[in-house]
Length: 260
Image (cartoon, rainbow, N blue to C red):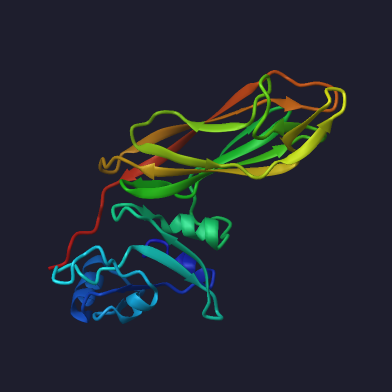
């Protein structure tokens, strides 16, 4: 959050963190890691209970009792929660860049390098939400597609013999592909074939949700994103193509340690 604080402020977004730690512990933590946004102490977990995020799996007599489930609430000016992110695994965190890009729709929250590929059928832009990744951190790979006039590609599900657009990642050892979100396709009637098929035309975005799985200093590594599709117009379908996007990411070590 601290690394992206200026971007949050510039877009009118205030950042707070709340925990059951004492004010003294939070003050030491802020000094050690140069945290300048507000760290709020909820030592008796009153607010944590009100939000319903108290981790009741920890026994009351355990020293960690009161530690909440990790997550992020997005609250509007009216005081109402309009979005939230919670992940079951305490070792996994969503990146601030993802929050800025996916929830607050900030156009360029310091995203990674953009790769562009143009064919006679379409232009595709691929980029990660952040140029860096840590072990246990989530990031989003976005592929924006602009199809040529009167051109379409197939969505899901399609009958055998058709090829739906598909986004995949090459093996890197640093990144795990958790899931890919495709937009809802429109239905097109192909009268000559007496079929109704899901297609995309115009513009669309595909989102791949990825997880950092390796910590290796500050090494820069490359991820290869692959976009497979078959383009068609009103007269014919063209040969399937696979576009590749070499995207660099920087692997960062965990930089926070417990404060005594």
